[in-house]
Image (cartoon, rainbow, N blue to C red; front, top):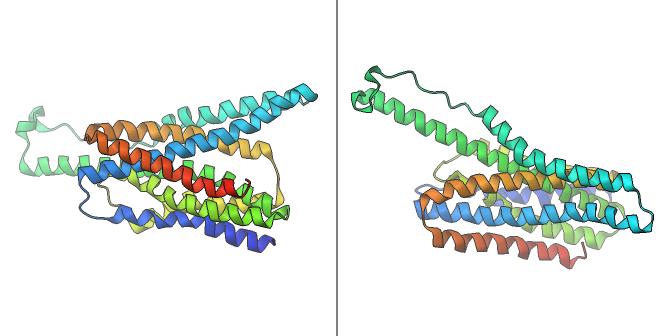
Length: 285
């Protein structure tokens, strides 16, 4: 498979993420639908967390197991520290980034300092400010999710590129089909937590590029470079970021109720991730 064919198919695999994004433009989404979509995304993200941390840990585990046969101790220690640092950066680092990028500035002091003293105009301005702050926070969360998924998809793209370069065309084809189906569900993972926030088409395009574009880039890099350390770095970062996002969504959804529905949709999202990943496993990846 040529480099041009590999990059073209990698682009197809990555940009299927756009199939799920338009659901965020739906109007009149009630609390039950919001909980359902959010928990569907949690299920998908939970699967991705298990997947990426498992892939990353297998690289570390392989380096450690080789020590019994004269493997490189420095490499084993380095991979272990890299895995831990990536998880730390994804979880703790995003917490600090989110605080720094938050622009929730307080309103000027109101006359009298009591809500009852607000004029109709002041009350309307306060409500508009709160709505704008909640919208900005939801859109930031969506882009953080897209970034975490993009880190994961870059590592997937590496697998496509490496397989194609090695001449394993059958495996590369199955990987592309599997990742395309897999990435189609990831669009729901990005827009599910937005709730009743209706993003613009421009925002959806940006989120899709951040989440799906790295599959295309990874396939190009993987065609020319084979680096377990590079894969490990992206797996670890993605795992930490996904765990952070899951915690954020979970804490927000709990306030909306509909616990039983949420658990059903959590299962659906988790199982959908496993089913689409089985396509990849079928190809011997």
